[in-house]
Image: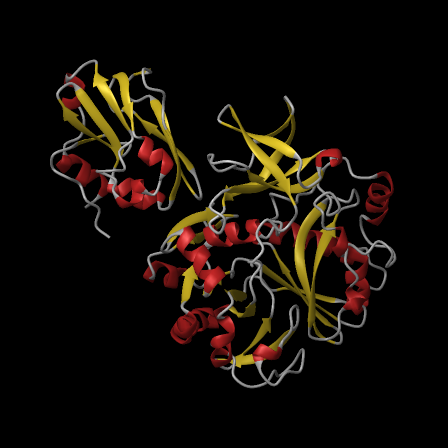
Length: 128
Length: 377
């Protein structure tokens, strides 16, 4: 059960991933995180327009057993949330890096992305 | 304090079970996923490690009288080879533990108690026994350290359980084959040269069996069950599925629906308390509760619309005010919606009553429903 860690993303220690496109970062949780959670049954997303700081809890993902906070790896304004994942939380399990994304943040400080874990560093953290 | 491990710990590791702390024990919460294991038990079959649960044997000419003065249910209802759900109450009617009592032979009983309650129960029973006038006629043997148990549950267990326990029973209820046991009956079968007690009981709401015996044969029993269980699509199941299964059918879990300040009557378990059988610990307090009415009742509820799952500790709201607390809550794998149990004032404890569950500051609509929450079609 080796978890995928795509090379084109950056990672947070708390198991979120970030994909940067221009000045917008898309955020989701990693394959490793969804394996650990299993059976995601509910996703609570923030309101668009909310300002978040890096490391701030901004969404909640719930499995049958537990509720876990999702932390924004970057600072900025929430400019998009994935309604599809709120309607169908199982997307987090089936497509953590694709259809199962959580939210989009307009970067307040693009340099923050450079401070996130590289794929190599995240692989080392989760031991794959 | 380091965590305790059951004799099946190596088996869980081999199967890749995810291990968590539960009541001081290191136990598998799941192997594949809670939903997968849950649905497998509802449709086919599952096997659970319940070695962490406790065993106490009581024997002797006064054992029945001692148990009847100590437990809530009427032990005299039991014929040899039968079991009953019952409670150990304190003087205030609060619940020291909920348990199963089996009559193994004319003057021999086995109590199966909760893992987290082994020490308090043993202490309680020891103190009661020392104050019991006819204590010379009772031998108590707390056997949790040397005994283990597995539960094999689900509608397809009958397809293979006879291979695990072939032939007729050697003690308990006399039957020609293990599937002839009726609900709450038990018998003895040999396995690997040891005597196992096999009861038609369980806490999933499904048909099934629980087998209790010496700890040393548990791993062989577990492996043999998995080997013969393929016809019934048997899967190993963890505590996660055990909890969602029992919540759907509203079976109490000690520490949630029951504790030392909660009576079986408040929990809605009065049918298992025999107030007219004669004196027993807590009877006076329970009779008073029955006469005056309880101040809160354990109800089942389900969420009315899609929401985060309710969890233990969340507030129950009626109108604008908090009126109680959720004690068990989860997403129901069978129903695909949030369900739970909680305590509310008796006036609200009526199926159909609208309530709300406060989830992270949001009041999510729910409805009180009749127990069990889930019933098979």
